[in-house]
Image (cartoon, rainbow, N blue to C red; front, side, top):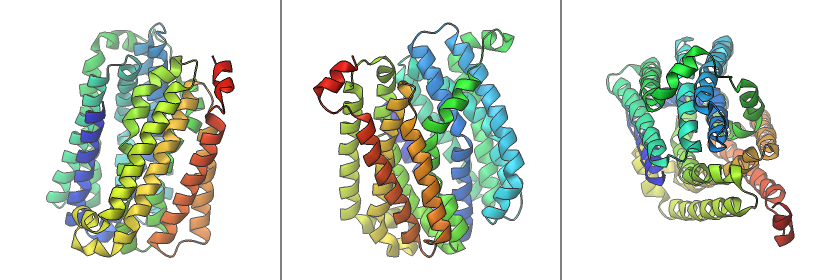
Length: 389
């Protein structure tokens, strides 16, 4: 699982290594914002995956078929929402037209279907298959984006081939659960749309938190500065997704746990990975930014540790959100939403003058959420843990 996640992340970052060199800074800012919008618009996908994993882990009847039907319905709802919001997104991101956003909308159904399949694999603790799916998803999307960039198809081409890749991925993922397709298509299995919608507020908050800063930067900064922010955001994404496999692997155990051991293990492992990442980025910030963005972005080296810390803090918050979701408690998720909303407001109204101001504002929000989240989630003393049993 760790190998699959790591490979998927490396391949995903390779897309931006190409885009950083093939696109102008202004185009790069637009593409990065729209790709993050794919993640934000797909917040229901993570909730779908976790609800599906929870039902499969607890061996609920018809869990696989329910997951597939839920993924389809949630995907259609997400498509409708993105389509309705298209005119607003075009204005906020300073786009030339609606087509790139509509292409984002077309990716919602396959994204949610793939998430449903991933949830069944996660709940069944089929981690080899799940890690393989993560890797294939990343390869397909990266291949589409790279091809469009090399062909000079610009923002619309990158989003178009990425959407096409999402559909191909979904078809391949469904093959892993083909024995349940008949039941899902017959309509006999119930859906868990209500549970997904209820869980979205908490479980999917991290997807928004880890991506919203790039579209916000696109809105408040100049075109060139938004491109610079997009380059640096790769370090935040690496720090966020790098240790994510720990929470994913331990989530089925969290769902069944009577004590806090899975939480402590996940927090300890994530903290160690984040600490190494921040130290590494601080020591090698210059070479790293040259590799990621090229010589044109070397002046941003001092901000590399800031973005790494930003992603790392959200990675710790993700562990806490997953722990709460396994227990039906979304308090930390609500804290994430509140902190992100406040940080966005502060950036738009006051701290909009530079890449550093935007990044440090969101960093402060992530650190506060993590600190408060640990305080409300980790039992204080053996007595608390024993009572939880």
